[in-house]
Image (tube, rainbow, N blue to C red; front, side):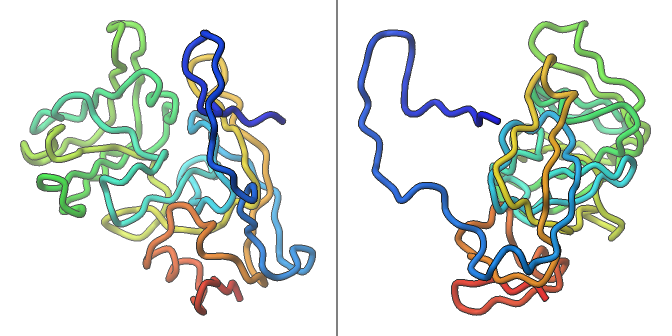
Length: 237
């Protein structure tokens, strides 16, 4: 399966762009992969290429895997869809880019998070089940309609408000780290590819991994996974 990459090329004009020379894809396993507990799982579509070492959570409705949400609500985690306009106080309508809208399906439970001027997350709202996703009314954004309202006027673009799929049972953030992706997987993007998602394998336990390879990792993920850090390694027991 080909993983898309720009390789530093820009436009169709003949060109040669020198890229930094590296040793290639970072390894995930320090221990022998064959002794780890590995499970076959299915990823939800719409998130593009998920890199090896990505921390994953489980969609609370469908059981499909989605990127785990870190405690830093305004990072570049591909699991987030940043709003393109303020979520109006007392409503349950969210506007996101057309591309980001394919990260969601009708029936998924929608979480919204906002900060204050780019600070770490200060408020989460469980907006309930997605009732509809309108991608036809407007040419430049999609309208997601959930079932529960936000409770104030602070869910603004300036506060880096974003939405993601509910993927955990613990109150507040509702995203629980559960698995680690053990290879690059293209989950698709946009109208014609996002629906397919991706089949993959994930690491569950009995492994020593390189911390530097992990994507979307934080202290909560460490706790969720029941792992321990040892220098440059993560030990999954």
